[in-house]
Length: 71
Image (cartoon, rainbow, N blue to C red; front, top):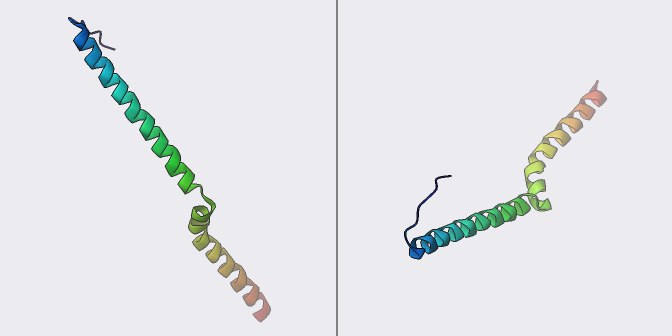
C-alpha cells in the first residue's frame, strides 16, 4: 500500500470518506450476491433447471421398458 503524506486534516477526512464509501459499496455487493444465491437455490428454481434433465431420463427409461416388452 502506498503511504500518503497529508498536509491537512481535510485531506485525511476526504480519504476516510472515500474509504467508507468503498466499504459500503462492497457490503452492498455482498448483500446482492447473497440474495442472488438464495434465489438460485430456491426449490422452484432448482426444479426448473432439473425438469428437462428429469424428462429426458424418464423418456429414456420408458422407451427401454417398451423396447424390452416388444422383444
